[in-house]
Image 1 (cartoon, rainbow, N blue to C red):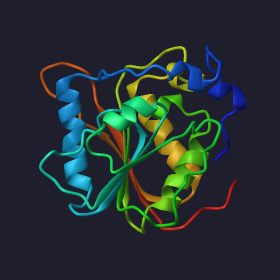
Image 2: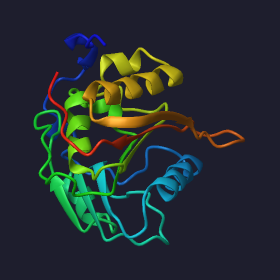
Image 3: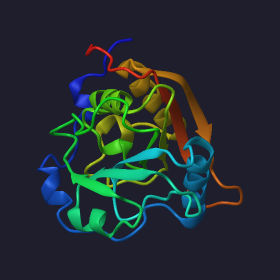
Image 4: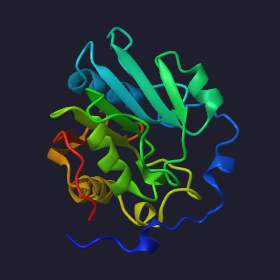
Length: 212
């Protein structure tokens, strides 16, 4: 599969992301019904008692409140947001667009989530390859997204596509990463209106794929 050209990942605002995210935003970026759909996906795919990785995290993780996990680690852009998140046992402030390598060992986690943030990655294949590395064999990654974004920071290819196109794009990211299997697209938009909610789910092959 041919690689997307560099201009696909251009953004209107190319100033450093650390400056953009320096002020905390204690808000949610999708409505309550879409959040409930995210939580239900996590309930379905993340094993109770497992170690969970919340990538591109903030002050909430949308994990099922009644499910206990052995630990939850988060990587995000704003320290104040991460510090307020009650589900995180440990967190790291990291700009994945500058540092796609993750500070974890191979196979550390039993599940991972990226919630309404995949559209901001300028090196998504590299980041998703790293996520596959830090998950145990067969562990799921749940990537959720809606039709909302910060338009100045979302990459060009994302803004050029509709909901179906977004799902196909994220599926392609995982295929290009090379260490994912059982990749599937899901439409979990709540009935009766509100924000749409789509997901792409894959399972790690349990190894680090070679760069392409």
